[in-house]
Every structure is written in C-alpha cells, then in structure tokens.
Length: 252
View 1 (cartoon, rainbow, N blue to C red):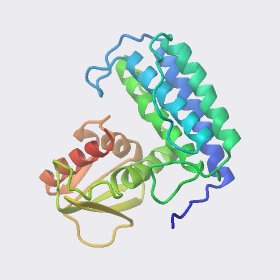
View 2 (view 1 turned 180 degrees about the vertical axis):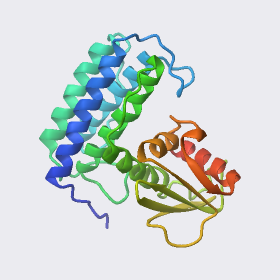
View 3 (view 1 turned 120 degrees about the horizontal axis):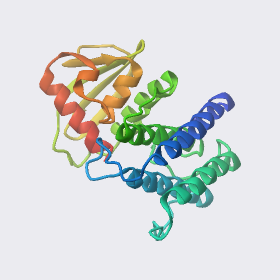
C-alpha cells in the first residue's frame, strides 16, 4: 500500500510562491541572453535551460491532467521561440497545481507519495536549480531562500537518491559506506552500497565521512552547481567523491 503525504495549505502556498518567484527570475535572466554557456551543464546554453524547464513544466501539466505519464512525449516544440514557450509553460504549471490542489492522486516518482502535493515541491525545486544555472551563465547569482535550500537537500536525498532505483546494481559508484549530510542544524544519514541507498533523518551512528555547511552551499554542491570548496567535510575524502558521483547518477 502506498502512503500519501499530506501537504499543508501553508506549505503548498510556500512552494507556489517560490515557484512563481524562481520562474520569473529565470525568465528575467534568460532575457539577458540566450546564447550564454551554462558552466554547470557542459554543452548547454541559457536557451537549452529555458527550453528544458518549459518542457518539464508542460510535462507536469499533462501528468496532473491525466494522472499518469503522457505518452508519447514530448511534442515537437522546436518551432517555438524559447522564452515565449517558457512564459506560457510557467503560467500553465502554476494554474495546473492550483486547480489540482494537494490531494489529487497522480503519477510521481516518489514511492511514498502519489499525490499532486508532491509536484508543488518538485516544481519549486526544479525552478531554483535551473534559475541558478542561468544566473551562473550570466554571473548574476542571487541567494536561495534558506528554507527552500534545506528542503531541497531533503528531496534530493529522498526520493531522488534514496529509493528502489539501485536494486540491479546499476551504478559505477557503489560506495559501500555511510555518509552524513549536515546543514543549518539538520542532519541526514545515508547508507549506500551497490544495490541500495537508505536515508534516515538525524545524526545517529558512525559514518565514514560528513559533509556540512550552510544549506544553500550544500544544496548547490549536491546538485553539482557548486565546487567542493563551497562545503566542508570530515573523514574519508574518497567517500565524499564517490558519494557526490552517486548523487550525480541519481539526478541525471
């Protein structure tokens, strides 16, 4: 039986506000120039990011409409101007989330939550990661809301990293170690091997290494948007490298 998380009205409003603000900022920076290279995504330009996020938004509009994955996907958006498509898509996803509310049963990739509430958080965090991408491309990076950054760490560790994705041992970074992530007074303990990743809240037990720092720095490091110098670590540095590589596999 799948359990369904209940997203409070206050939290839903927070995510929608973040989605609106982050998506507006992404468009604002996009208009500074679509041809700029994105350092965190080799081979991508700002236009690539804008088109990617627009397609993600429109995909989730369809997921919420159908309650399932749309097939086939994606449609051919190649003839559309990138920012025009993006502006339509960001308006559409906000409208779709508001219409769905937080308790609609739908497809998600979280084995513990099959409600539309899942997409409130996911779309806010999708937006902030790619807002950072375009800001880095134009060297105009602005801060992330600390609460959103902390929540983003939590989401990246589960369900993005933790979950039943590794049962076939499909990883080039088996790790076989326990890692602790600590940011702004909150900790997660991650036990990883070739066929599983288990994430628990808190700082109980021994670990091979600990990664720590401000929430924004840890969040961006986990997403590959900040260098190793942005965070601090204690313990086995080879485990830190392998852990970061495993996270990268989970977020490709």
